[in-house]
Length: 105
Image (cartoon, rainbow, N blue to C red; front, side):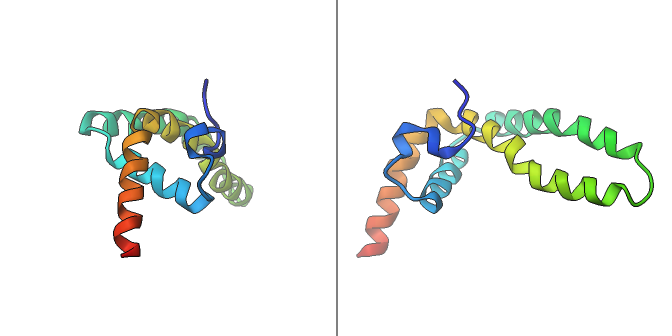
């Protein structure tokens, strides 16, 4: 099942939104180099049709479309980030807890 939002992941339920985002960043940092390349290629595959569409639009109509595309960017790419990071959430959560305990001391 694809998680569209971080709130849909059961292991991240006890955390606040900022903490979930930090855990996601830690999980993405745990990816191997080939997985990071695959992640970026997957994002490009989703975004390339929009770039091609924008190349054919001329005039001022492009400005509002670019604003909408900027707002939609996280909605399109965050499920991909979550899907790639999902196997590394356990490591990222333990690393996050470790970082918080060292900061508290």
